[in-house]
Length: 611
Ligand SMILES: Cc1ncc(C[n+]2csc(CCOP(=O)(O)OP(=O)(O)O)c2C)c(N)n1
Image: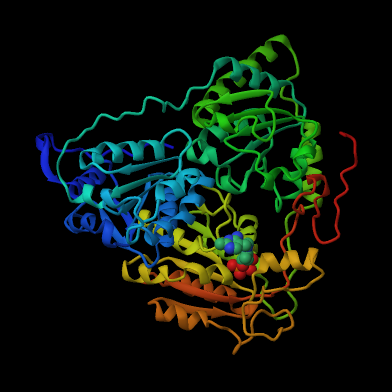
């Protein structure tokens, strides 16, 4: 993650007398924060007054602080800059907890600024007091409680620096109301005081050489690429490394777009709903080259059976990740871009040395034969919906085809998220936003809003579930009022689909509390007219959006075209889809990746030549 360039501060600025609140806004301007998502309230109110006069910082008034937090995350993921959200003390601050946890799990750089009760009242159970620093301690990269106005510029500079550098993550700055109201002087630039914080970015040369050697002699390597490669903006280097070595690539849910889906060396996504080829490649590999990834349980399946034949090269900016879940044979700490750049040179040296010695190196021919056979036999696909019904996969696939790889796609959490990851082709970095680590329902609409606010020229689609949409759809009001024309595709199967899928597979089809419409069952058709509560078309229109509905396969293209043509307000499409569609392939939770099912009751036959 690169730190955003601080806006130039006029030389004559010098020390200027002002309030803490004014100093906060000046500090935000100085670090280059352009957009803040938030809601005012008593404790933060002093900051909102000078915010009104800022010509550099745009404040977007959201409808719920959770929306502000996810919007900051979407903004950060789409722009590569630090996202900013703001809330008042107590409930305002605690409403930020979910998006902060979400950003922490996915290593997204955001700064959350909260008002706190006056410093003398802290600890007295004052009105709207919550110990937000205590609450967010385990879910922030760092947090600050500011009680002295003089500290504000330094703390803001440090917060942005910490959020953006090393392994990115959320930082919370909690400022007592009296510190915002006090008189102070604003000085910039400030001296930061972070003696214990020096993330290592430059990898160790010996480890790089070791890694290149392993890659040279490996017979079955896989480049296992995670979100860290996107955060480090290392996708150009990744492609060079992949093409130089000819090794297969898998990109995790957080890394989609880091390597083009259309590239012949791409095996797809590993993990619980990954492609058979990607999952099995990891299982049968003799070398995993893990770049900016953390051996998440959704990728490894049952850990003690994961990639049993593989040596591990693990490169990550965060030393705490290395060896956390799987011991590394070659640990490399550093920035993914610097690591891959150094690896390219080391691989070239290995290749020249091998050529000079007449030795065969980087020979993966037999491996590719095997991989190609798996790819061909078990492509990711889906069964068409029964006659006359819309299949959710088809809707998502068609949106991807018509809208194309330049658009930004944000997903909610559930079946639609997995189908979006499988059936939209991601070709470019920063085009796929989702809640991977936390799996936060309600992420899509506000994240799409944040992405569109940060990239107004991009087309931004939220692919959402009918369950997720009901958690945060009110941010469409924010979009309508602030000229943020996102498009939202609700994949409306009338149920909490992913949970229903687990009930189908593991709970004898007992659908406890997963129906979202006003019943009865509709032959698998999704919710019937008259049972749709809420009616998403009416709801969206009430929120100032264009609203469309699509129920028949023959209308699909025309409805997407219509949505694409409407650009002066947000557009919501209610796609009524087949409710029994399931996400495949699947590795059931807690089982081994070796037990992957390509489809229901379809166990791939891998042979056992490598085992
Ligand atoms: C905040 C939150 N609550 C509960 C869950 C558990 N959960 C995971 S997926 C899911 C269902 C999502 O339903 P919907 O948005 O309709 O998407 P679908 O799976 O039908 O595509 C639920 C309840 C969650 N991930 N997040």
